[in-house]
Amino acid sequence: MRVPQTWLDISADDPFGPAALPYGVFSTADGRPPRVGVAVGPWVLDLAAAAYALDAPFAEAADAAVLNPLMAAGPQTWRRVRSTLTAWLSDPAYEDVLRPHLVERSGVRLHLPFEVGDYVDFYSSEHHAANVGRILRPGQPPLTPNWKHLPIGYHGRSGTVVVSGTEVVRPMGQRRPPSAQEPEFGPSARLDIEAEVGFVVGPPKPPGGRVAVADFAERVFGVFLVNDWSARDLQAWENAPLGPFLSKSFATSVSPWVVPLDALEAARVQPPERDPEPLEYLRDAEGEPWGLDLRLEVRINGHIVSRPPFRTMYWTPAQQLAHLTVNGASLRTGDMYASGTVSGPGADERGSLIELSWNGAEPLELPDGSTRTFLQDGDTAAITATAPGPGGAVIGFGEVSGRVLPAQG
Ligand code: CA
Image (cartoon, rainbow, N blue to C red; front, side, top):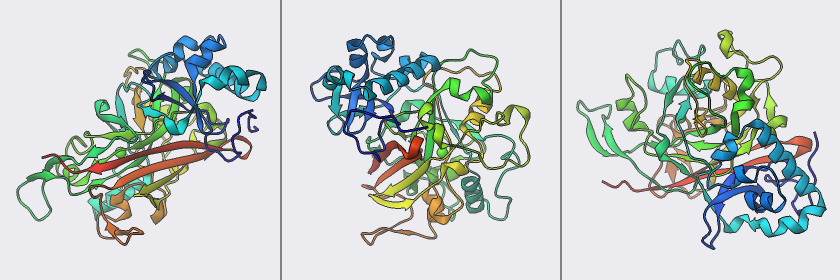
C-alpha cells in the first residue's frame, strides 16, 4: 500500500491526508443548511456539490444533511465514492472544478454526522473490566463468569448522543454514599469520562438471521470516537440488578468525522488471544482479524492524562456486531455501537478517571498545580486518536471533546 498523491498542498504527516478521507456534516456561516463533507488536509470538500459538478453517480446519496443515505447505499457505493475521491484529488485535471467546493475546515461548523438509530455500549477491554472489578468488587474475581464468553453490553440512549463541542451539564440524581443508610439527591460528585471507539451500521438488516463476523465490513460504514460520560456515584447506586441507566443516559459525545473502514486496512492487527476459545459464531474469520491499532489520547484541560491502546481490546468490533445480532435483532441504518472503555495494561493507558485515580485514592496532578479525581465544572475532556495508514501515512480521527457545565437543579 502506498500513500495516495494529491494536487492539494497537504503535508505528508497530516492526519487528514488523502489516505484518510473521513466523512462528516458541516455548515458554513452563509446560512446554507448542513451538508455532507469530506475532510482533506485543512479543507472540507462539499461532496454532493462536487459530485453534481462532475456528474458522479453517488451525488443524490451524498445530497443530505446526514450521512444516512450514503451509509444505507452499501459497501459497493462506499468503495466507488472513495476511489472516485482518490482519483479527483490525485489528478490535477480536476483542480479547477473542485476548488470552488473546498472550504477551510477551520471556518466550518460540524454537526452530528448521522441520525443515530439504536445505541449499544459494550464493555470489551479486559484491562478496563478487570480494573473496575478490582475497584468495585474487591476480594472477588475481577471478571464476571460470562465475560470471556460474550461481549457484555447494554442499550444506551440514542437521543442524547451529541456531537463533539456540545457542553455537558453535570447530571443530577440519586446516590447512596458508602457511609449512608439512605440515598440522597443532588449533582453527581463523581462525573467521569470513558474513552471509547464507535462504529456505525450502514445497510439495514431485517429481523431474523444475523451478521457473521466475516461480514463486518459489508455492514459497518465507519469508525469514530466516543466519550461515554458516566456519573459513578449514580451508577454505583442504580447499577444492580439491571445495569447502567441514568448514570450514562444524560449525554454521550461523538467525534464529528467518521473514518471509513477502507482507510484502516494498514491498522488491522491480530487481537489478543482469546482463552477459552469463544463459541463458533464469535470466532474470528480465518485470516481476517479485526483488531485495530488505534492509538487514543485523553486530555483534561489540554493536558494528556492517558494513551489507551485500542489494539488490546479483547473483543473486536466484528465480534461485537455478531453478538449484537445473534438473537435475530434487526439493524437500522445509523445504529451505532461503542467498544467500551479502552484501557491498556499500563497505569498511563487507562481510559477513565475511576481507573486513573483508582476510585479517587490516587488523584491526578495537572500542570496548573490542581489535582483531579473526577471532573470539576468547567473542565474540558478531549479524546483524540490516530492509526497507521498506508506507506507510513497517519490516519487521524480528529477529536471528541466536551466541557462540563454546572448542574441545573
Ligand atoms: Ca462505556
